[in-house]
Every structure is written in structure tokens, then in C-alpha cells.
Amino acid sequence: MTKALTPEESARGILAVFEVRRVRADEVLMLGTVDRIFLSRTHARTVDFTLGLRHAVDMGWVELTGQGRQLRLTQSGFDAMSEQQSAHRAATRQFAPR
Image (cartoon, rainbow, N blue to C red):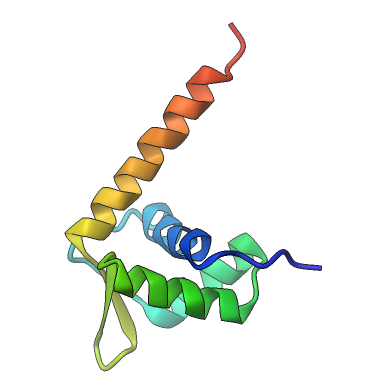
């Protein structure tokens, strides 16, 4: 059974899709592409994507464009994605064998 994600976890998962595709602020991805990659990477439910997308939009991380068929990564979303990368690197270093 798939674990339900919080809207925050799902929104960060959506940012991770932008990261994997090396998207910069103000660049767009097709909504269907983000949806497909998110669901395949997280093994989440469609509702998790929907709630995460709503959270990401509310946080100002992404914007729906192209008549709702595209997602634009905002500067705020790019910054949040970068902060997430930094936190992950710091945690990895902390627990790395010496």
C-alpha cells in the first residue's frame, strides 16, 4: 500500500521533478510530464500530486501557464529547491563515514 504524502512532501516532490530536469527559474515543463515523473518517482497517488500542486501554487513555487497545461518554476520555487538541495547535502555529510 502506498503511504499518503502530506501536501508539503508532495509539493517538494514536484520541485524535485524540476530539479531532475535541470529547470531554472521562469522555465516551464508540461503539466503531464511533471505529473508522470512525480507519480513514477514517488509511487504516490494522483490525489497526492493534486494536493502537492495546490500547495506549490499557494507557496508561490510554481504557476500554471499555457491554459493550465504548463507549470512555470518561479524564483521562489527555484530558491526552495536550492535550499532543499543544501539541506540534503548537509545531512549527507553529517552521516557520511569518516
